[in-house]
Length: 163
Image (cartoon, rainbow, N blue to C red; front, side, top):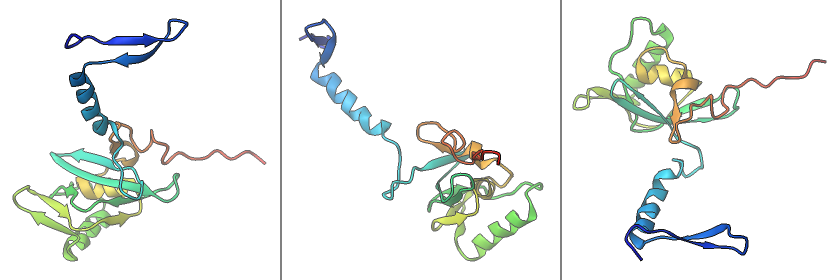
């Protein structure tokens, strides 16, 4: 068989049912298989990523799909500085996380690092903690397949029938 030639096996109706490929191509396809698997924690929760200001944070939603909580995963990076427009309660929460050691400064990477998983009240709150400014968490947390939380069905209000 030629190096790049693909042959097909057909059924009685002439429809292709199997492909015969060179072993090098087969091995290349198998190596790609792991890249296509959704990232997930052992618990089965899908991991979402927020990339901002050359930083990368990971986390996952849980609880009610219309108003999910969000957990920032240990090792996630957060911005050192905050925008002046960041609400005071989020600034104070970031300061609290630093004071108890849940966020610590990493001078080499010029950012804050999550020392442990941090559970917060919403994806938007998590995004603001990470980015240091206001973000719509349903739009900025992205799955390994490229879908936002909103596109994955989070935050969508269920329409109730009129009585």
